Length: 468
Figure 1: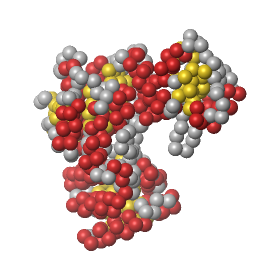
Figure 2: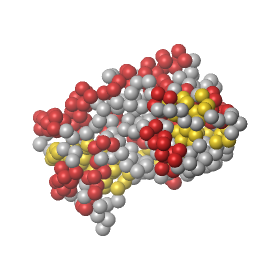
Figure 3: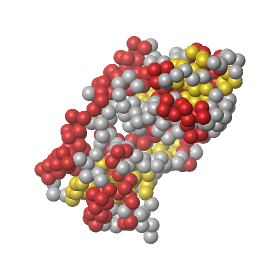
Figure 4: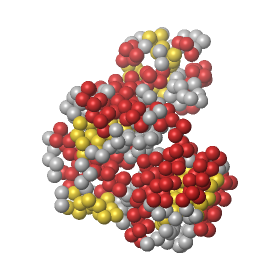
């Protein structure tokens, strides 16, 4: 997305100072991709870590832009348009105004891991109950300041509910997103050590996550699983904010298969195509959240059964426990991202599956990012966990210090297969070849790692792409 809906100039006055424009003028389009500016557009000067769109002001006016939204301190002159204190903040504020204009009910979701899966489940089930056009959601994992703004600005009059995913890297990032979206319902999927480098402790992570209720409206509730970590911190903060909490029981029963589960909800059987205990818990939380939403909307809870009948149509999410097509091995591509909690959840699943099938299971793990001083300790704890779960071998791709820590911890306890390497392409390819040579037909492989590790490269190896 690179543009904003038409708006009259007077609607922008609340956000800054109009220059050389009458309030009654209609602005046909606000564009923030300088390459797509057309005559009559206004241009929004967004700023990122590696770019500043103020650098393109002259270019966009030469391309026919009639106005710009910019920061005075960033510009050598006054351009026609709107001067604001912070263009990035303007984007979120304007998106919030637009959401309020449409009156869409919002549901906000965050968590250390599982939030994208939870968002997809909640969206899918609500769409089955209310209709696909009525329910929209964050695309992919566009869950930061920009992504939340884009989602809100993409709302349409036909939408009645928006499911918004919220992520963070640093302290203080979720609260503004909550205030902009003003959710009626909120949910926290999990609390774990993701981003501990920036927040310092799991307690501070919990405090940041629970700030998702800072903008919450009365009438709804905050939902989380009964077994969530740091529950007392979440409960106390919600009490101070006068937001009711609902602890969701993990009472869905599952019998897992290689690529799906049979779940029992209220004594009826359904097929759930996402494998793993962690996905079952996401479904538990999604179901509990939806029960509360339907009660709020005066919709019979029996409708959940009709939605569950469609669960088998649920698409897998690329890079998230996706069953990778292969004729020789059973490969689970969970390479999109990783933290301590999500690695352990995925390991639990393939360990159980290996036991059921009487097969060996292997792990290809990429370095987990943003752990700071806790990095060595957490990676060693994952080695201990994988050995406890009887994983037969490990390919680890990371920096030299972590390679040494992993190898030392591994060799102290076992002589199972181990290969460590750096994250450059040649090293990863060499490691993948060694792994393929070690594995036998029928073996199980889990591929996991932080996005920066790009562990999907392991699956580029020809042996892991064989379909016959």
